[in-house]
Image 1: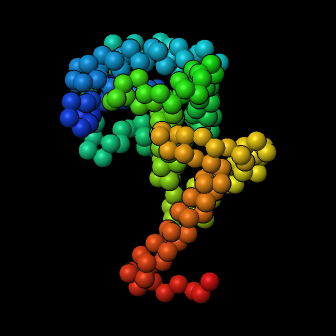
Image 2 (image 1 turned 45 degrees about the vertical axis):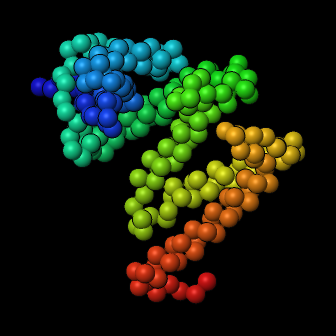
Length: 223
């Protein structure tokens, strides 16, 4: 007999709690107290199902679940829950991709009518701007993807995938994009500056990796 679905609770820094609902991958909520995070997670379960259903993702697997009956457990020390373990069936990977697309579509729908000023402006001194939130989404996705690497057993798949993504962005660049010159979060950026910083950063860390290898005593072949 299957166990009841669970909400896994974790305390972050200071008065900040996270509540994960792994039976519906992607469902998460937060709160300033443990109880608040749990209550928000039960509401988030229904809200996330509504999001998926609206975006054309089948919710048949979850529609009869009642989040008010979910058990509450502490997040394990390694932050791995039972649903995180084991190989994926083909349909599970397909379901993930559908959810991923639906989630991104919902995010983009919020942004369509925003002006450049609205994207940049912080509502309060302590809140992020929309741009900061979106940049956090982008950088975190890359960071999480890197956790899939089995270096050096595989050919640096994520490292190369990110490189191809950046390469493609410049490949499809329109002439007007090359003349970009604007201020982002108080700093001036141009297309040429972004290109320079990408190459500088790569070269800087080429030297950094060489220093690490030398410190490890690794004897690398000549370039």
